[in-house]
Image (cartoon, rainbow, N blue to C red; front, side, top):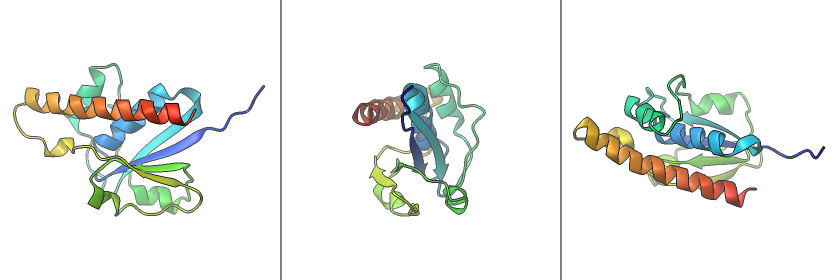
Length: 145
């Protein structure tokens, strides 16, 4: 039996309420046993209910997820192969450095919490962000197989 290395990934955004939660869910769903993803925020907030709905619409349930603080992972000495920020550039720079050999990547996605309009309009924009994150995750999986 061949042992394979599980690639551990931490996705970070501001509130851990939308983008990092979606990225974590996609990598854990699509990456199979080769990947282990977690997510956290610089200032953990509340899970965005419309993001929960948007993922539910494509068969992924994150309704039981909690928002987590990136600094708790740091304090507990958690090690990751990749720390990927999924917020804007300025916020990504606030992400702490994890000791060890973490590779840092930055992927920019619009923040669903900033979307305005009717629920239908917001869900439409969230679906675009969700689908962009999914594509990026699929690309990441291919590169890291």
